[in-house]
Image (cartoon, rainbow, N blue to C red; front, side):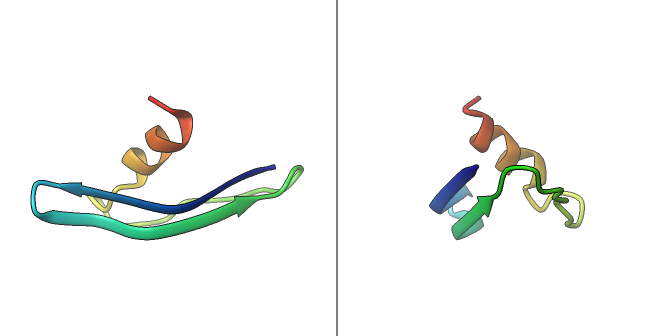
Length: 50
């Protein structure tokens, strides 16, 4: 299981996402969907700790 809470990311004064909390259960299948530039890769990098 992986869980996070209250993740916020911004570039300068522009918020990318605010107060995001997720919980991934073991054995589950998940997808991350969003428009280009919406922060999907950035969010995954934060989860990976890079």
